Length: 401
Ligand code: CA
Image (cartoon, rainbow, N blue to C red; front, side, top):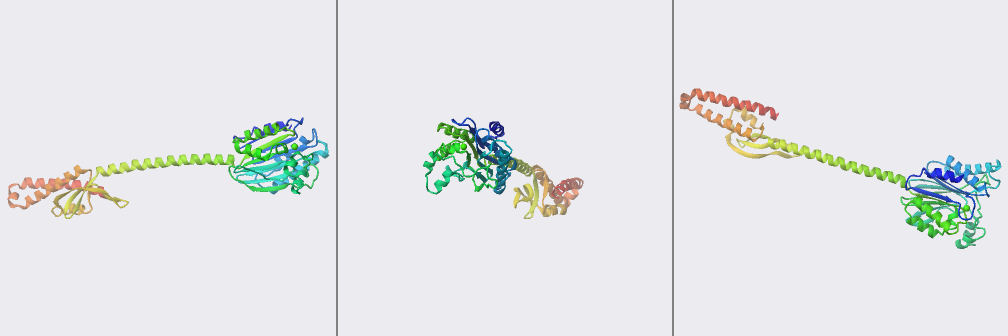
């Protein structure tokens, strides 16, 4: 039975992208409509031919369509699937499944991203709600449509005309039947409606538009449209499929984009934290370092290191001494031209004290009296100062390279 199939199909419905409902209505004792909801394929079929015939025809058509329809918006391939369905209904009648003369309409749609293709036979309709306005996408193959187009009838008159159910094209009679094909570009936020004439003949387009526009959830929307047809009398079986354009794909994309943004924010914060920590470490290292360098012939002490980063010096002058570079040992003087690095200001000041002591003792050793009176002490002290300076300089020289 169609209702079993409908329930099975409904159970695969993901949240919030489409909805469907079929109902026998208030007058008929069985439902000849069938529907198919198998994204990206959606279809409605309205069978005719009396009990145990109309529903057989519509269900065969829907089953064959489901097997043969393309998985992409290929209008020609969808048309061929409908032609296959037509031949299957004719064959079934010939094999006494259902009844001779049974038939069905079909309105089939394949919707993928912004591309919608439709194959249509009969008077089941496809509508599009675009920016709140309802557009009928398909043209009915019906006597009423022909008469309205010929100017012999108004749509209002057609609604109550005794021949309003006469259709001019259907599946199940002519093996050469071809469906009308439509290719439409749609936008996110558009809403597709497929329905049997049990809706469109009972509910005005303006009321359908209003319900489609104001009912956010597509399943609830489908259910409300069926209720409106029943409230209007429910003279026919009524079947509705509502599909939100690009709903599921867009939701997945949006979710992915949200996650990507969160991840990127986290990565940026992490990088900033690492850079901050590295910057603090570099600053702490630089601040704890010092060096001595020859400037204008004297020795100056700098806090930091004698380097640059992005053109910016990594040091600042602590103070200049009165120690003349020319008074120091030639090796020391030479190293002072490029800077002698030490472990902080304290070490730098100790080295300056040693230089000063060296200079004083050198001067004393050049004085004959001092040479004579304090030779042993001066020499030993001098050599101690020199030894100490060189020791420091050797370590500092290693640092510079
Ligand atoms: Ca009908």
